[in-house]
Image (cartoon, rainbow, N blue to C red):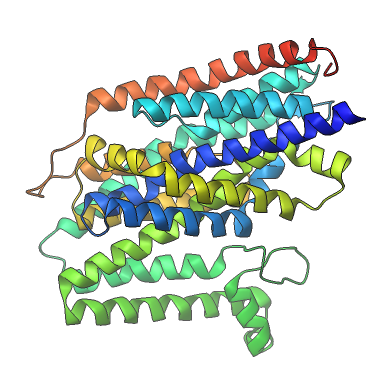
Length: 403
């Protein structure tokens, strides 16, 4: 019994280490365009990354944690030893990439490591799930690149005034925010609700509109219009200040989303452990991951923020806004579907798409060499993570008292 408790403790420490690494690595990328556009300092950005990503982890982290913990292998339950092998492998590889200045995609690494450890347990491969996740991953650079390019082109077009284009985009983001599912909001038939849903029920909009769905759409639209009005008012007072405030607000929204999508990479392998060995609800596990992300964002993210902000593309404020919006939408889609994603990949795809649009005097373009190295690291991290985790599990299982 004592050996089991010891393994669980090691697994919890490994999860905290992994969430710390994720906070330093993946959750730093969303703030990078705001830093690159000089709307935030690096240190202030790192402080906000820790706080806001930790909140997002608790509010939106459950679905991807479930996928990592239960959806990647079939026929077996992930043991504390397998969870330890998964988390140690992924965190170590990501830390090495972090120290070299190359963001390693956490989703690729953790997914590969989880599959490797599950295979070492004798589990089967969830091929259908892999196909869906891989399809989503392959779609990310195409969808984000096209959207970011189109939005950057729009925002840089001198014939379209900022007081028209930017408030319109803010309205769309406001509507989406009103409809995302959050763990601390109540819902009639779910453990998560949306702001629009709560307001609809509180004001009785559903009964007046005829259906709950229509009421949610109306309330979401009203929140979107409020966002339009606030941003328009800011721009009318001072265009530069208004754009920078819009940029920082979008950065925080994306950081919040990144916490929700990334914490599951650290907590997912322990889902079964919490249920079977500890008998605790997953909210405690998400809280542990949130603490690790908070600490990682504060202590280790400045270097990665600089790497993404300065070395992949130098973006001005408008192109940074164009990079944030597709990243936010794609990441929220991944959370809704329960698909693990790499926020480095999400942000870099958007940055590259927006960076390809000309017309900014302070643009240095996109570093194709560094981007190429990063793509290679993505592939190697998933394959290598699986192989190393498979081997590490067998090594740990062979040790006296652990097998």
